[in-house]
Structures are given as structure tokens and as C-alpha cells.
Amino acid sequence: MSDVKPGQQPTLRAERAAVTHRRIAETARAMFSRQGYGATTLTAIAAEAGVAVQTVYAVFGSKAGILHALIGEVLHQPEADTLYEDAMQASGARQKLELFARSIRRRWEYGHDVVAISGDAASTDPAVRTEVERVLGIRRAGIGRFAATLAPAFAPGVDVDRANAILDALTLPAVYAEFIDVHGWTPDEYKIWLATSLRRQLLRG
Image (tube, rainbow, N blue to C red; front, top):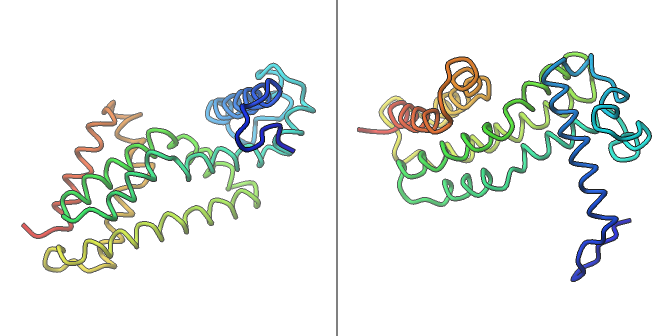
């Protein structure tokens, strides 16, 4: 049960619990990236986070539970979500694509490593595989909704199915990682490239 009730300030106990939750999650995230999901144990996470392994179990239940929490933070990234909704509501197609590119840049800047970890984990953990498939479904549905709003401005030869494929392929987290981690681009450079590429591929003129 939460120590915080509506209208009340968080208690010291609740604040400490939140700090512990964050420390465990960030420690696990770093270790999953560094040595792989399969090779990382809850005991090792606890030791590096400076907590008892029983605390890790109490907070997250399992290694998959930690990853579930990390995936949830990427899936519900507030700034990226707001930019996506702004893109859906914008009146002009070019503005839509600019806001959409900004939303993708923000989501992957925050969490492309978690996506890579999830792919690694899904290869060996059926529970994670199910979670990853669910999240992919959400992503593709969001892309589909966005593509439909661009339809009046499509270039000749572009339809909603083709737009879906282009939006999906160019916004893959692996593409972001390739530019940023391998080729040394900045997130801003990626965003400019993405918005420009989408305009050229999808829109008239």
C-alpha cells in the first residue's frame, strides 16, 4: 500500500522506496547493456546497487519484472508522447512530420538501449518475448494512426500501406543507434535527417 494519499506530501519512507526502485532499475539497465540480460543475475544487480537481493525480489519480483518496468518507461515517455499527440493534431503535413521526428528522437534518445536489451532478452525468455511483441503491436498501431493523418498530402504512388512501411523502417531504434552509437551523430542531427527523409519519401513537392 502506498504511503502517499491524495493531497499529502510523500513520506520519507515513500521517498526512500522511490530512490531504491530507481537505483535498482538503473543498475540493472547498465548491467544488461554491459554484459547481457542472460548473464546478469539478480544477486549481481543487488550487489552493484548496494541493496539486499531480497529487496530486489520485493520491489520487482524477477529479472523480467525489472525489464518490464524499463520497457514501460520507454513506452510511456511523457515528452515523446506529447510530441506524438501534437503531431496527430497539427494541421500541416510538414509540421506533422517535424513533430513526429522530434517524438521519435526523444523516445530513442531516452530508451534505445532498453529496446536492444529487450531484443536480447526475448531470444531466451518467453515472458519477455510476449512483452516485446505486445509493445511492437502498440508501436505499429501508433504509426498506422499517424500515417492515416498524412494521407491527403501523400506524393503520387504513396498510400497508407507504403507510408506505414516507410515510417516503420526509418524510425526503428536500431537505425537511431547506428547513427548515434556507431557513426557519432548527435540526436539533433538524427532528428533533422529523419524529418527530411520522411518529407522526401511521403509528401508531394
